Length: 444
Image 1 (tube, rainbow, N blue to C red):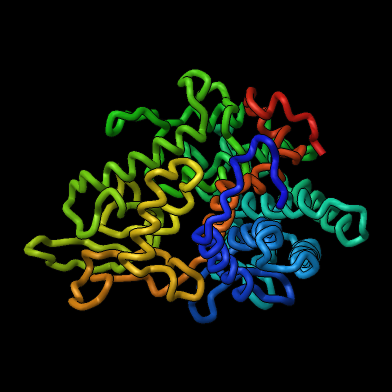
Image 2 (image 1 turned 135 degrees about the vertical axis):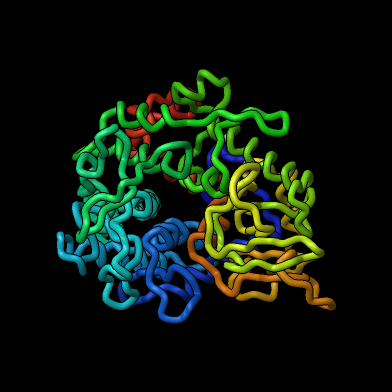
């Protein structure tokens, strides 16, 4: 097992292996072997998510190290995926796979063409690039196939025209439609866009200037909740996704230097605030407590309005739920709790135990945790869990389980990206310094 002196000590706990094994099974079986595309979720005839595909590319090295996949098979899966994106059509046509080096959010699983007239997505392309770069960092020997992995991954990342995606205010746009042009929304306010900006600044071909990062950071909201000060973002996943690839421990940009913490500590505080909100349970939802929390963007039981114990409740479908501010309809997401493991294991592990053993939400499912559950939605006496459980598994949920558990166990994903020159250049151009960024000089 690869490790580094700065990584946490290896914890060969069977729980972690079980969590990772079931999460990886999604990428093992919900991937088209002919092109490497990964289904967004387990619904009939559902399209590929490029973000889930990026998570799959990041998952293959972890699967090899944990004995879930052979090195040879992982290499072939990576090559199949990279060759598809290299050879797929790029252009302004509405049925292309991508344009200007970016890719459409959803692609047809078989053809790899744009699905649902969806947007060309900057952030989902960033997750895909992060997966490509993770694979390139892992498959690093001199064999012809591993050289090809690195050559394709680097070329695809370097092709993205970040300047084209920059809005007039300096921030990055959410996306683009060939029919109507750029989406009016921008990546503003702290969120999963942290990785997006690092990759945009780190490009050796079409980089955004440091002023783009400053424009984004100028929209941050610093809040005080439950006796903790932190950089606010409501959905829990926004405090995790960038951290799946980048080790933010001990490194700071100008904003965090001014606050005296780093983004890792900020995510720890966000995790603790989520738990405290569930203990407080201001809206009185069933099941919430110290070991039952985790509000994030997720599938939900609605849209519906039901009277529950004399209270009229509004339930939603897929929404960007958040706490302590934002939408809360009683829907919790176990995967988002697991993905906070590196930040606050002392509160995460009891909650994971509750989800697995008390609510029985994990072991009898082929891919582990489904997207979400809601104990307030209905009441079915005699079941281990009273209420609604999502019928689906999502690749975007299971990937962070695999990666963040591994970051807690060995730090492998972090270590791979600490050797990626694009990540390092992006961090430095964003103004990050300190910790491993000042001491690690191996920028291969």
